[in-house]
Image (cartoon, rainbow, N blue to C red; front, side, top):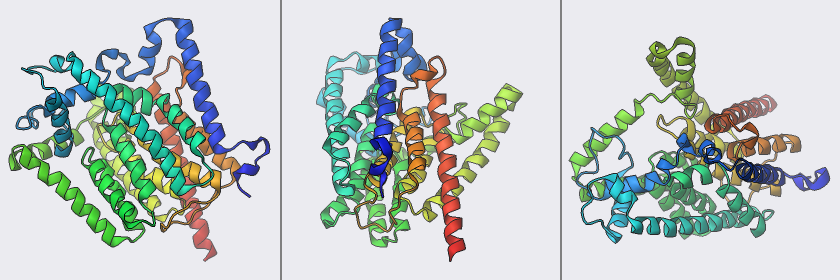
Length: 425
């Protein structure tokens, strides 16, 4: 018996949709009642409109001259070289005559026009990607639910109020990963190969999606894993020759080292949680002690998470565990990285709405108890919904509390299920 038989027809999808929709409506009502920019300031990142779409404009500036993109004295141009080929292309569509500052990029009308077109295309691709995913993975989630989920994501904190508001390439990476997971287990060999290429492209826009290669290792699809490595290495190395070759590669590696060593006292990373706790109790003097202990803690977390990923028999839990380092391990992660959990959410709905997943992967499709799935739906809603019920609190802290709670629950569940299975043997 699947989740369709729950009294009142409450399914994980309907519960999630209701919570996110009600929170979005509540925020719109609150903003109208307040009639103050403070309401939006509370919601958006860093509480100011000054950085809206900044990651789009900034990286066009960094990519305008590929010979000057990487400089170890400036860690802001931190994307892989393939990403800057893309930004260089956007710059050359309508180049500014003399670009000497970021402000010139921000106030150049054609770049905003290009951004609007690009963002519209991203929303369309996101909607089609969600629909194609469910067509490939679950017959129980139709086109209407797929479209509604797209709308809900636009009004969600990680996607609409972070990735879109900041114009971060995390949105593009998310779309690529959705299509990759839709095609990964296809019976069509060309689509399976396309999945590898999409993952490689995602990893060369943001490095950490390379972790998706572990899916192929878990399923013992060694040849595909090897080809994925080849695609990834080629897309990583070749763009350097459009820059300054090995000099640019060296500068990029230095930037990666400096970025990973940064201390950011926010709840967006495991290291940040530990550092913040030390500073709360010990003041500024305890910062670097917390930072060092946080580095140890984040690696312990990573080992536990990857271990649970390899032993998990649930696809959506495996995906949640695999994605979590992309969200809470990377030292410079911001809240838009939580948008990647949409991939795990799609697997969750495919598994719980239909009772079983379609595909040829090496996982055992299984449904947990109905009530537990509803609890998971609430936790997912906590990650994505605008926390209007917590107005006045830090939005980032609220959604990351849900992320850490869900991470603990998923890890605990995975270990319990694995132990239970071992005891049966």
